[in-house]
Amino acid sequence: MPQHLAATWRVWIVTIVALSVILPGTAQAETLSLSQAVNKAGRQRMLTERIVKYYCLAGLDIDARNARAELYEAIELFETQFAELEVFSSHEAVNTALVEVETLWPRFDAIASGPVHREGARRLMSLNEEVLAATDRVVLALEALSQRPYARLVNISGRQRMLSQRMVKFYLFQAWGLGGAAVLDQIDRSRNEFQGALTELRTSPENTAIIDRELDAASEQWRWLKSALDLYQTDAYFPGIVDDAAEKTLTIMERVTHHYARLFEQRVADARGRY
Picture 1 (tube, one colour):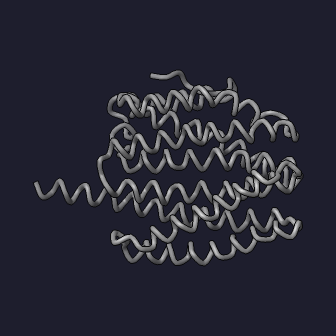
Picture 2: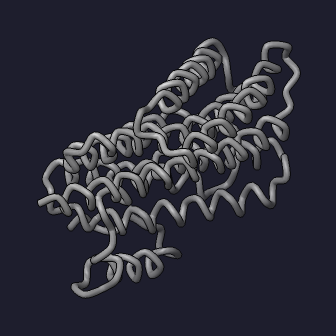
Picture 3: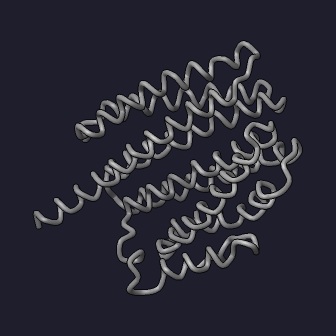
């Protein structure tokens, strides 16, 4: 097993969670399915973006106390979920990806948990990309392990959660004077990816009536978020409005991802019942 990643003041929390995952007979060890693992691993991607987003909100002094609280909560959830995902570390590809995340995490965590300043944001800007790429490889390894087409829907839907936070993160970099052409390009890339994935999800033949309703709500919220993001082109920044729209989008996509994970589990159960 890889060593637990954690700052010393959080090590007991992560250790307790890890023990509940890996000890035989525990409820978590019995119930953490591959669909749940893909969902959680996908949420890890979102948390890398969310952490930096709240770091920037604190740096811009936008509801700074709440931003710091949300930042620490995101860090703690990342570490808790990492411990839960370690139950799949016996699979070589998954373990390789988890080790990569663990190697990168301490530097990322040290900056994100430390004092908030522009230099810290600059350092997070590049390191964040490495951590995000590593967490994405965990998702892909778990998706491949599942050998089920439904895992792709969980992955795509879960990635939308990450993109909702990523767009705001880059928007805040720009508002903090840390942007430029590369940051503006990333906002556009994230917008295009979100739109493309939303279209793919809405046309999936696997959708249930509930999923279709949730995706309708996501599309409506996306129109509002996209309009709010467009304001950066006027050099007038409204971080509170953009973040509120992103949070509502995240909430909807969290529900959609949960429904896809449940659908994945149901299809697996149905297949087993036929044999």
